[in-house]
Length: 193
Image 1 (cartoon, rainbow, N blue to C red):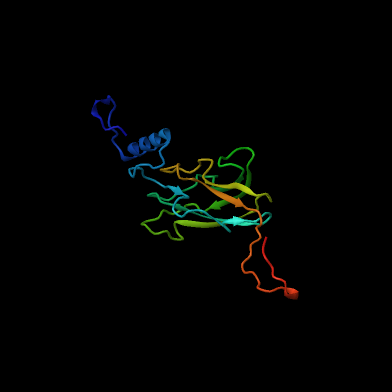
Image 2: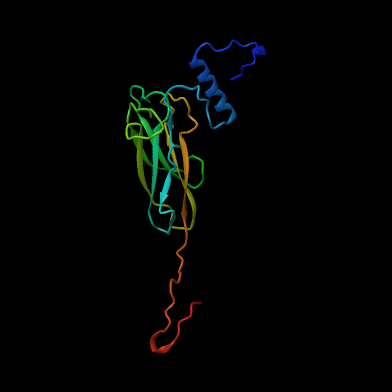
């Protein structure tokens, strides 16, 4: 938002105009934070970091991805008539949503989704979800992409905090010796390779 009076543009008269211009500038510049002048609902996946458990998987094993959606705006998020507030969870080989990704789950969030009136998250202004994920049975890193309001049906003050990417690491089985016995059958010592 340019406050220079010599730019030949009239100054915005309302807070909503300032908010709209600030959000538009952030979207056009790649900024990840929007001015606090922006008013309205703000669904975000950033309040609590998304996690995967266990942190490192073994081939063929299942993990659980846990994430929190909250409304850090100044008003309730309300779905328009005939629409819903949706959070989608994708499995991806990379960190981008594309045609090769698999939709794992779609969660219908409450509407209206209350805003957090203060610093603390409460059940009234946030939801915690867990989604099971079974990655390919080969070692490597793949990703779970979580996005809320992907279709942009919900008016929000900030659309830049609606997506989070969680890496899923699959590692080979490893044989490790915790303690070597001192004696073995028939008085032979065992030495690890």
